[in-house]
Length: 126
Image 1 (cartoon, rainbow, N blue to C red):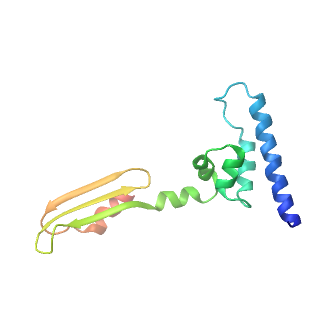
Image 2: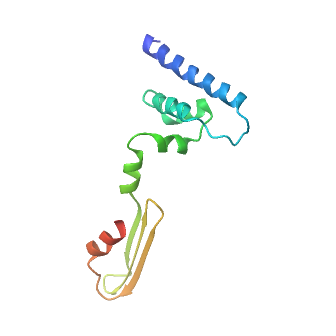
Image 3: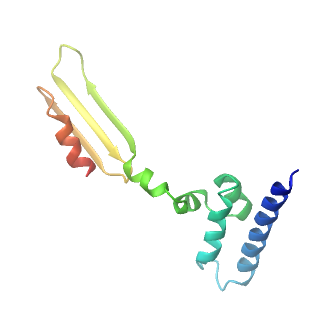
């Protein structure tokens, strides 16, 4: 085990002790975690995986992941699901369903030619 690994484990153990201290002294179970503790957990994610940090500190993986730099920008621009179906090559019935990362949904179904999808989707994504 190298010195860096020992330091990294020491940092994780130090933050774990800070969380344990805070949990023992908080006034209620519903009290929010102080920003300083969240920041310490985020800093640990530079060295350890989000899964390892969240499990070690007893934190929600999702809550910790949302605090990591760059996570929000990726989420806002990502497409979770998009499907375009045409019944058969001879049919002119079609349907399209899109789901944005924020949960917004667009469902179109019609008979006839496809609309200008770029224009339809541009309005939906913006």
